[in-house]
Image 1 (cartoon, chains in turn brown, blue):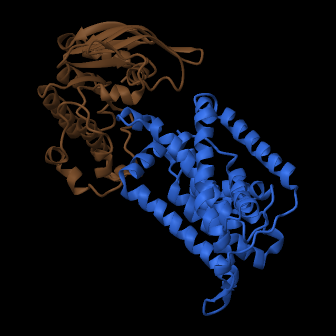
Image 2 (cartoon, rainbow over the protein chains, first blue to last red):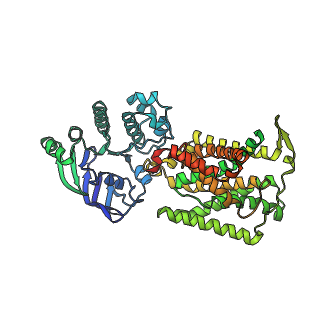
Image 3 (cartoon, rainbow over the protein chains, first blue to last red):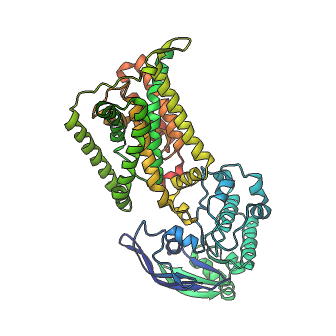
Length: 233
Length: 287
């Protein structure tokens, strides 16, 4: 579904990604694991077409066998990419409900507001609140719900569990499995190796802008301690 | 004192209209439009020329001049600003600054530096009894129209889908795009609209202020202070700060006349010390 070939990216003279090639198949949950500064966020931003404003890129990205390398961010979203940024990207000037209704419905199975509120009852209770008045966990739910509202086919989630309590992390895991069961594919950045192994099928280890290893969840579980040490957690 | 406060609000109405346009343009395009004052000046001259050369009265100017200059803004955005936006912000900074100088000098060449007279519309020539004091009817009209305009813009921004998109794109243009919204499509109309607001303020100013080529550059420095006080990119903040700054400088004029010119900037410094993102700005805006 998603194929990346020789993707490189620069910030000015500094190279952030070095010929990254990888793929994600339909219905998979794949994680990108790596230290801070390894290029994980840059990779997701490149996929979303958001890197252009800061620097150069090279290589190709294709989605459903269509080359989307030259497409602008909104056009990529219309092809089925949904992006949840690392800071959750909740609009402070928009209410919770406006945050949900802002994106146009694009994919074949966009979530209705009703479905969102059934899955996340606290969003219904707070629908008139400014988006950023929610707690971190609630904001993460809102960010996920918002991207599901678009009907995205492939979710790009940048560390959805960062800084959240174990209970909420568990809930996010459930939601990711739920949406996968509904046919949505997920590529997520994850430092929580344990969580990654429990939710994802495959893992790419990124270091200094390169993919250095490709692992399955059994391998990650086996090497959990080694990986945690490597990641410095 | 009440009368002075009223003067302040009328002055503040101009700040608010100009700051509103600057704020939406800055928010959505990330462009500090240094030619904003020049378009205010062109609005006033537009009204003057319309009357002088075509015999069009104030009311027709008020309806015709802002959309025409707004259209000029649209062309400007399409031809120049858009091309410079992906580059360092300094390019648009210099471009709009240069443009302001060129527009000013073109008007100066034609009409000189002396102020032109523009008559008040006859319907608003008298005074209004406000109970405690009487006040020129035209000034009351300016205050009312500006407040209504700001209110209308606020309603559009908070109640409509277009407004929601503009608010989102003002806050995080990149993320708004990533959610499937073609922000670029809204950039040109927003730029044109901001310019039209400046021109509208200019037409309103013509009957009560000196119409000369420098009227915009004199005002715009204060308007930038207003936008900073209100919080960069915050639409509500810039309007509120506009009226507040008008009030403060008018009262300052009354009590500490020696400081009347600098008071706004003292206020700006004080606000920034207290809230670095401005009164209604958000810290995130700096990322």
